[in-house]
Length: 108
Length: 108
DNA sequence: TAGCAATGCTACATTATCTGTAGCAAGCCA
DNA sequence: TGGCTTGCTACAGATAATGTAGCATTGCTA
Image: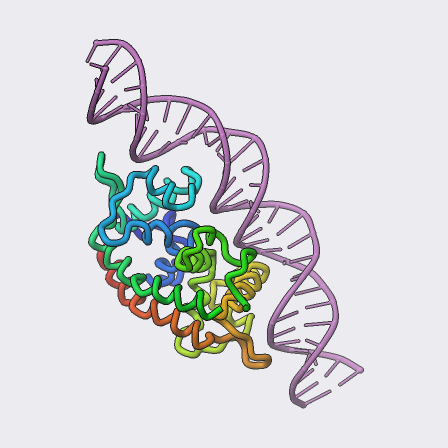
């Protein structure tokens, strides 16, 4: 029973999982981490920090712990962090986002 | 030229729109606001605060300003906040998220 | 096998961000 | 006029993130 603990997910008093998920994803660097690990990418904690604009290690570790407890990310010693099958499923929800972002940029 | 201003979107130094978008969406309450306004819902600023677990008005206004500058949200006087066509397009990227969240909750 | 570099992770002081409460001006409607 | 709601702001206190330093462990490699 790794995730959905009250310590990990804020704003889940409603009991609706979508709220817990939106809260988890709405923390700084969380979306970015999932994005950087998309499509079976494997990154060490330091490579991940570099990819994430040199975010501070403190918050990076905190976010990685949360994502691991939520079951979205796993660590293989010597091979770095990667998405779990569940994490990949989540990540697929954001696949279209890149194309949308391009359209958005042009729209402005 | 309402959005993608440096004041509004952090971490966009890469010039890649997806980074700017992930940064914008990764701020507290932003995803939640877009979620609450899905499917042509129209909510006054106060109804929106209530829907968002009574988030503080300070940060709510800040997020709404950012979303308006980004072109995702608009305010109609006397009728509340709603998604723009662009905002609806963005919101559609998260439609499947609710079902995923249910599966996630069961998985734990 | 001693030295070296990389790994995951933590400490801690500074800075940025968010919360909670109060309250303002403007519009509406009786 | 008076009460009600709207969008929005001020501000002090609390929480979260940053930036730098560094630790213990592991896998080379010389």
